[in-house]
Image (cartoon, rainbow, N blue to C red; front, side, top):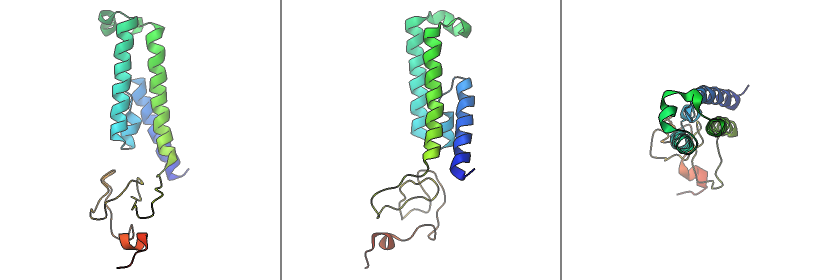
Length: 143
């Protein structure tokens, strides 16, 4: 199993553990996809609140979760499952590539890297000068 496969498996397992507690986005946190994790969490929480307010008595839902109808539970389970699959998919796709050859990419996450920084501001991986060539060498321009 390669690095992407191991990473995808861990992201899916963490996502499934989080989903079993009703928390979406845990797999995304492992992948350091912060905004996506917050988006999944708020989306599932908002959907849960709307479904409970429409299809169930909100007062009884806070005391007894087992009394929730299937019209509330089934969509939440589907959303949590899609969140786990999304984390797995993100990890499997690996680093993304840019069409522009002048873009410097992080060797860890594949995100754009500012050549003036000593770390990737997407994944905070420390970078050294030998990990990526200077901008002049990537663009082909000579000064």
